Length: 121
Image (cartoon, helix red, strand yellow):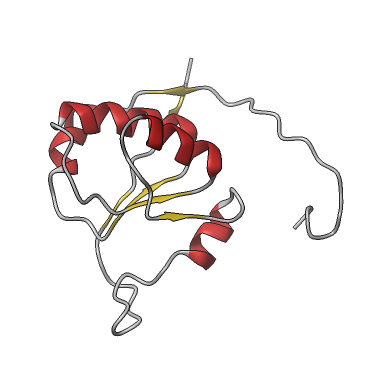
Protein backbone atom coordinates (compact mmCIF):
# COMPACT_ATOMS: atom_id res chain seq x y z
CA UNK A 1 0.00 0.00 0.00
CA UNK A 2 2.79 2.41 0.91
CA UNK A 3 4.62 1.61 -2.32
CA UNK A 4 1.49 2.24 -4.41
CA UNK A 5 1.04 5.62 -2.72
CA UNK A 6 4.72 6.43 -3.31
CA UNK A 7 5.39 6.78 0.40
CA UNK A 8 8.99 6.09 1.39
CA UNK A 9 9.41 3.48 4.10
CA UNK A 10 12.02 1.39 5.87
CA UNK A 11 11.57 -2.14 7.14
CA UNK A 12 13.30 -2.72 10.45
CA UNK A 13 13.43 -6.35 11.60
CA UNK A 14 12.96 -6.31 15.35
CA UNK A 15 11.44 -9.67 16.29
CA UNK A 16 13.47 -12.59 17.58
CA UNK A 17 12.36 -16.17 16.93
CA UNK A 18 12.88 -19.54 18.59
CA UNK A 19 12.33 -23.14 17.55
CA UNK A 20 8.87 -24.50 18.39
CA UNK A 21 8.33 -27.52 20.59
CA UNK A 22 6.96 -29.56 17.67
CA UNK A 23 9.95 -28.86 15.38
CA UNK A 24 10.95 -32.53 15.55
CA UNK A 25 7.77 -33.49 13.67
CA UNK A 26 8.67 -31.37 10.63
CA UNK A 27 10.69 -34.01 8.70
CA UNK A 28 7.78 -36.47 9.02
CA UNK A 29 5.25 -33.79 8.00
CA UNK A 30 7.28 -32.97 4.87
CA UNK A 31 6.84 -36.57 3.67
CA UNK A 32 3.04 -36.16 3.69
CA UNK A 33 0.94 -34.95 0.77
CA UNK A 34 0.25 -31.18 1.00
CA UNK A 35 -1.52 -28.90 -1.45
CA UNK A 36 0.90 -26.17 -0.40
CA UNK A 37 3.65 -25.60 2.12
CA UNK A 38 3.31 -21.89 2.89
CA UNK A 39 6.47 -20.16 4.11
CA UNK A 40 6.00 -16.65 5.48
CA UNK A 41 9.40 -15.60 6.78
CA UNK A 42 13.12 -16.10 6.20
CA UNK A 43 13.34 -17.68 9.67
CA UNK A 44 10.66 -20.23 8.78
CA UNK A 45 12.46 -20.88 5.47
CA UNK A 46 15.65 -21.71 7.35
CA UNK A 47 13.83 -24.15 9.62
CA UNK A 48 12.01 -25.67 6.62
CA UNK A 49 15.31 -26.26 4.80
CA UNK A 50 16.70 -28.00 7.89
CA UNK A 51 13.62 -30.23 8.11
CA UNK A 52 13.76 -30.88 4.36
CA UNK A 53 17.33 -32.15 4.62
CA UNK A 54 16.52 -34.23 7.71
CA UNK A 55 13.59 -35.77 5.81
CA UNK A 56 15.94 -36.95 3.05
CA UNK A 57 15.07 -34.14 0.62
CA UNK A 58 11.57 -35.27 -0.43
CA UNK A 59 10.59 -34.28 -3.97
CA UNK A 60 7.57 -32.50 -5.43
CA UNK A 61 6.95 -30.15 -2.51
CA UNK A 62 4.48 -27.42 -3.49
CA UNK A 63 6.03 -24.40 -1.75
CA UNK A 64 4.47 -20.95 -1.67
CA UNK A 65 6.79 -18.17 -0.48
CA UNK A 66 5.87 -14.77 0.90
CA UNK A 67 8.69 -12.97 -0.91
CA UNK A 68 12.13 -12.76 -2.47
CA UNK A 69 14.24 -13.04 0.67
CA UNK A 70 12.31 -16.10 1.86
CA UNK A 71 12.52 -17.64 -1.63
CA UNK A 72 16.27 -17.00 -1.77
CA UNK A 73 16.82 -18.96 1.44
CA UNK A 74 14.64 -21.79 0.16
CA UNK A 75 16.50 -21.98 -3.16
CA UNK A 76 19.88 -21.93 -1.42
CA UNK A 77 18.67 -24.91 0.61
CA UNK A 78 17.55 -26.90 -2.43
CA UNK A 79 13.85 -25.97 -2.46
CA UNK A 80 12.23 -24.11 -5.35
CA UNK A 81 9.00 -22.27 -4.60
CA UNK A 82 6.24 -22.75 -7.16
CA UNK A 83 4.75 -19.42 -6.10
CA UNK A 84 6.13 -16.17 -4.68
CA UNK A 85 3.98 -13.22 -3.63
CA UNK A 86 4.71 -9.97 -5.47
CA UNK A 87 4.87 -8.07 -2.17
CA UNK A 88 6.10 -9.58 1.09
CA UNK A 89 2.96 -9.49 3.21
CA UNK A 90 0.20 -11.91 4.14
CA UNK A 91 -2.57 -9.94 2.40
CA UNK A 92 -0.76 -10.12 -0.94
CA UNK A 93 0.11 -13.78 -0.47
CA UNK A 94 -3.53 -14.65 0.18
CA UNK A 95 -4.77 -12.53 -2.73
CA UNK A 96 -2.29 -13.86 -5.27
CA UNK A 97 -1.79 -17.52 -4.37
CA UNK A 98 -3.22 -19.79 -7.04
CA UNK A 99 -6.29 -21.81 -6.16
CA UNK A 100 -5.56 -25.30 -4.88
CA UNK A 101 -7.66 -27.00 -7.57
CA UNK A 102 -7.36 -25.16 -10.86
CA UNK A 103 -10.08 -27.23 -12.53
CA UNK A 104 -12.79 -26.20 -10.04
CA UNK A 105 -11.33 -23.03 -8.54
CA UNK A 106 -11.70 -24.67 -5.13
CA UNK A 107 -9.62 -23.43 -2.23
CA UNK A 108 -10.11 -26.72 -0.39
CA UNK A 109 -6.96 -28.66 0.30
CA UNK A 110 -4.41 -29.17 2.99
CA UNK A 111 -1.68 -26.68 3.79
CA UNK A 112 1.41 -27.07 5.93
CA UNK A 113 2.34 -23.79 7.58
CA UNK A 114 5.75 -24.11 9.26
CA UNK A 115 6.04 -21.03 11.43
CA UNK A 116 8.55 -19.81 13.96
CA UNK A 117 7.60 -18.89 17.50
CA UNK A 118 8.41 -15.43 18.85
CA UNK A 119 11.04 -15.83 21.53
CA UNK A 120 9.66 -15.38 25.02
CA UNK A 121 12.91 -14.66 26.78
